[in-house]
Length: 249
Image (tube, rainbow, N blue to C red; front, side, top):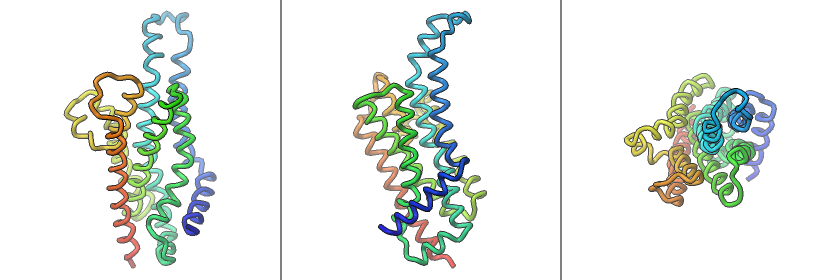
């Protein structure tokens, strides 16, 4: 417990002092907010038909949840991978391993900071999407579950790379595939079936449920089960990678 607190405090101070990291938590909800702002602007004076204005406003929750899914799947993986890779470069991870820090303690310490900051981002997305009550709680729970999966995946990539440059090179294409996958699935049933086991696709399913999309075949509990199944599998991979790194000379 003490080692987890120490890692959390160290990472929290580093995150707060790093504007490049903090901007990742601000950019996506800000873009969602701006889209919401412009859908509420009176465009009638510009000759835009009322039907289009109404359609833009009605589609705002879908746009907000789409940005939230992209944030959970795309923005955080390179961020976490870079944090872990930095610890490797600076030999911090080597010292932690020598001190007997368990992989779970290290992951909770580093990932806990990302989850803490992401909680505020999640509420921002919920506000833009105009969720309230039970819908807001479901949305926050689903988004934070997906963020947890991305944190563990990013940490695993960071453990397996030698430096921050390598972590970015490896994590970016993976993050783009995971982040944009649900968008592609909306236009192709085959892609949707393939990505059904992916946590970002299930975030999309939960978003569709909250947005009142008809014909959703996957029950809500099953989506959460798949997301946390992703977390469990990625957690095992992280532990294996951590132990392998700890055995290195």
